Length: 266
Ligand SMILES: Cc1cc2nc3c(=O)[nH]c(=O)nc-3n(C[C@H](O)[C@H](O)[C@H](O)COP(=O)(O)OP(=O)(O)OC[C@H]3O[C@@H](n4cnc5c(N)ncnc54)[C@H](O)[C@@H]3O)c2cc1C
Image: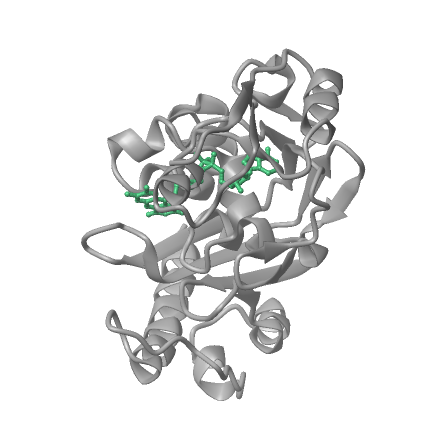
């Protein structure tokens, strides 16, 4: 690993100031992705700005049907929060299935979505729910946040502060996990609002995506036969050592149907 400067600011102002005093600073959350990538010399920032001392970035709250989760909230806290379990159990269940206990006790929701790994779980909840990403500069609508493979619409010096989720009538997350890493080979997040149904898929392509054609059909008739009737033409699926594209296409269909039938029984 190369030498680097290290700062642990106490608030957002100090953080931005420290970040901008170097050319190629990086925000450090739990370090679950960033530190290994630095060890492998795939990343060599001259300064790390550690966000762990900024209280404003932590915590979970609910107000006016909006569940807010601070960017530095670790996966284990989301999984075990009674607020999340009671208001949005699909999100608690998603968090409880991330990696292993070590990862869940270091990794953060902000780090996960800023990284936008194509097989990560949280991006499917961001798109599969009505959500907004609140940053140090602005509010970003979920649909405008993920740009593609490991890419987001964040500016280099922009910091995720919290994520606001509008609580749906019901929702479910199903994951067909890689048995070693627990990353998603395919993950489906399905939610029902009074005016919309959302279906988001992770793990299957170079970036998380929504299945818009199916959403419209399911809004009018929430039933698994709609999945067979819809030509949702999903193309460019991942083809790798874990699963080929045809298998992923099959999994998407089967898992969406399973998700629908579970929600129908609730
Ligand atoms: C063995 C292993 C198994 C895993 N399994 C899964 C899994 O099953 N499912 C899954 O979804 N994930 C999985 N992960 C990923 C893990 O859950 C973390 O969410 C992810 O690695 C990001 O880690 P972190 O929060 O520590 O962020 P870091 O590694 O500290 O940072 C990641 C990136 O995000 C940027 N960043 C961090 N916080 C912010 C912020 N607030 N604003 C802007 N940018 C920010 C950093 O600069 C960096 O570029 C796994 C990781 C490991 C190591």
